[in-house]
Every structure is written in structure tokens, then in C-alpha cells.
Length: 308
Picture 1: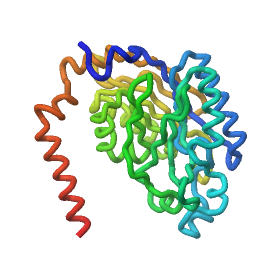
Picture 2: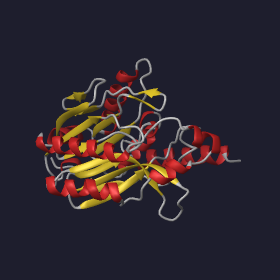
Picture 3: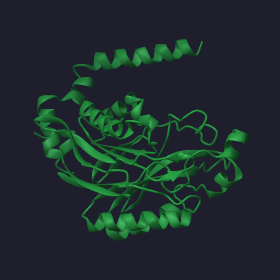
Picture 4: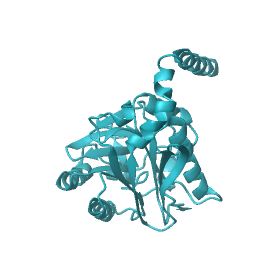
């Protein structure tokens, strides 16, 4: 049976690469070359989409200057870019040549205020820049010293289907964001993350990825950093997973702690089999619209009460 997730106009199979990535500290040019090399490798392995971590293009971690000033320091302001901008144009040119979609994290400069930066993830299709998501849930004060939160929850339409992006803390601790993206039509959720190597972090990335996938009946791609940078050691453990009807959340590919790429093919007819049995999106916007309204009202009342 046809559902939004296996719309006949969209490909039934989509091959995805997720990169355990180690950017080169404070060398954006060399880091961009590494991104391009992985994009070429992803194309060689038949990927339709390749995903990189949070702030993959940039140095990530603590910055004494940003912390001391409580705002972006001069170096971060100088190295951040507009979207579209020089880096996205270079990646876009290769994406067009190889007919591949690319998502990577970067520091984005506001086009109207040069002193405002966003922790963003940009989606580039073979046709060009599709759009960028600006992280909403920023870590305090590590990220709020440097970045301004985004104010939109976009879903991006591509010829691979609708893609929703949330970034790290957005994804792990704020499940309502994934639910909104799914209700808005996303069939792939992407989590570019910068998750440090704390006890149990690798399994946490896998488990949360599978939970977000199963509870929203979508495929999910988490891509994490590796190596050491900015006072942190990154956990890696990039993962691709989703429902595997008649079973539940399944890990389709999982990385370790070393730099490299994992690849998996997503089967949207298999995903749609879940919707034959549990068409939750139709219910939540139709027969169970009352539940959606109750939850929206509760959120609104909680926010209003906290604001008094």
C-alpha cells in the first residue's frame, strides 16, 4: 500500500553514507579537502546521500576567547561563512558532478548581522543548496557563548524524499523535534552530532538513533566526530538504522571510534509495511487529532507558566 514514505514518485531504495569524521583544527581549507575526498568515496560506493558531523567544517570545542567575551570571538567571526558561500559552492560543484546529496555541519554567519553565528547543517543536492537547519537547543554556556539559536524546524524536499535535520542535543534530549519533523513529512531524519567520548556514549548514540527511528517510523542517520579537539575526545559510533518490518529498530550499519564511513541502503517499501499496520501520522492528524491538540495545548500552557 502506498504511504507518504513510499510515494511512487520517490526512489524505493536510497543508499546512505555516514562519516566518522576528524576535522583538522583551525584549518578549514584542509578540512574541506577531506570532506571532498569522503564525498568522492561515497559516490564510488553508490551513495545517494552522505552525512558528516556537527560543525564538521570547523574547529569544535571550547574557545577561551568566546568564553571570555560571552560572544563569538574575532577568529570565529572571520572563519564562519554565509550559506550559500565559498565552502558550499565547492561542495555543490562536486555534488553536481557526482549526482550526490551532501549534509555537513558548519558555522554559518547571519547574512544581515555579521556578529551573529549559527551552528548549522547545510543540505546540498546535485541541483545546489537546498537549505540549512540552524541548531535550536544550544548547550549552555559552551555553545551560547558563540552561537545564536535557530528559530525554524524545516523539512527539506529532495528527490530522495523529505529530509529533516536536528543537531546533537536537539536529537538526544529533545524528542519532540524529531516528532515534529516526522509529522511534517520527513522520511529520513539526520543527526549531525559532536558527541564526546563519555562512559556508555557509543551505545547511547545507537540506542537513541534506533528509538527515534522506531517511534517516528522513519530511517535515521547519526554522524559523529572522532579524534581529539578543543579539549574533548569524540566518541565516533556513527550509525544508520530504522524499523525493519516485521521487526523493530535495527542497526543497518555502525562505526567504531576510528575515522571512516559506513554505508547502508534504506528500503522504503519495507518501511511502509509498518504504516499498513500502524499509520500513526494519519491518525495523529486525523482520528487522533484531539491528542495532537492536547499536547500542543499542554506545551503552550507550560511555556506560558514558565514565562510569568
